[in-house]
Amino acid sequence: MKKRTISFIVILTLILSLAAGCSGGAGKDSGSGPADGEYQAEFNTDSSMFHVNEAYDGKGTLTVKGGQMMIHVTLVSKKVVNLFVGKAEDAKKDGAELLEPTTDTVEYSDGTTGEAYGFDIPVPALDEEFDVALLGAKGKWYDHKVSVSLAE
Figure 1 (cartoon, helix red, strand yellow):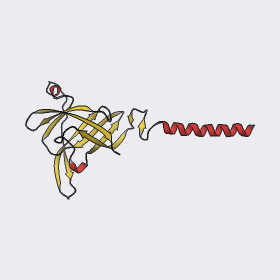
Figure 2 (cartoon, rainbow, N blue to C red; figure 1 turned 90 degrees about the vertical axis):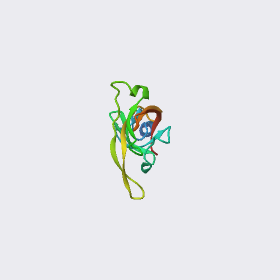
Figure 3 (tube, rainbow, N blue to C red; figure 1 turned 180 degrees about the vertical axis):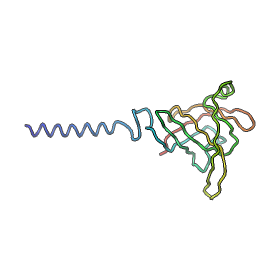
Figure 4 (cartoon, rainbow, N blue to C red; figure 1 turned 120 degrees about the horizontal axis):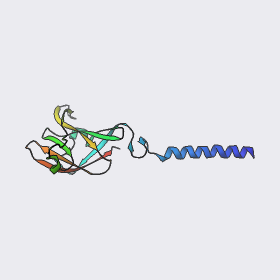
């Protein structure tokens, strides 16, 4: 009888350990998003004119810190001068927090290099569309829908 009880406890402990290990996804914390760190992520847009530089295959670097997510994407050129998370009408308002570009050096597959603007864009949630407005070099605002998902 004692042997059976000990065997039962050992098996039960193993089952509970396996269940606990399977309950959360890899790289997740508390089930709300990826754990703190850096990840490669897909940056999807609704426009062929507003997208990640071809040298990066549609991907950017997603940084997660304290539950906050930010993706850095390098665009095709320097023709997008500001971004705004939200709609263009709100971006035009006084006090709107515009995202300033970084100047990124791009290395292309043929060995050439060039410069393009990059942006650090706050990501409210993975796999859900959100609004991003962009200010073009000619001074006009454009509305877009974007989404971010972890790269496979």
